[in-house]
Image 1 (cartoon, rainbow, N blue to C red):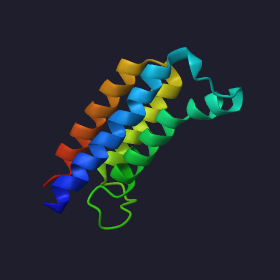
Image 2 (cartoon, rainbow, N blue to C red):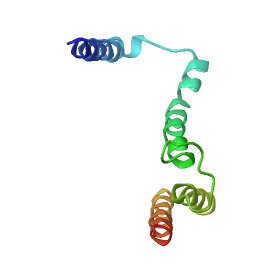
Image 3 (cartoon, rainbow, N blue to C red):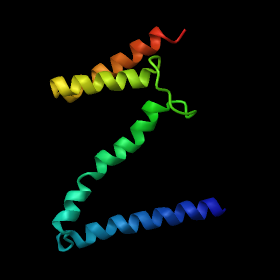
Length: 107
């Protein structure tokens, strides 16, 4: 029962905070420094999610070795992105590198 109340309470708070921005609309303005800081939030959140998946994919500490397919694929993806600047090519190259590396060293 406590978990249900916790989830409902968190949901209500989240909806109220988001609704506040919709209701206030253009009347709510942030200083330019805050707008600039908020522009970095998506990149920061994605980095915080992805980095542990690459460096410690099994959650048992760092796996900085050549048999780690996540690490290998991320390095390939960074190189392809720097060279081509094409998002879909980067995603495709990263996926291909991951699956080939995983297949090659799964046995």
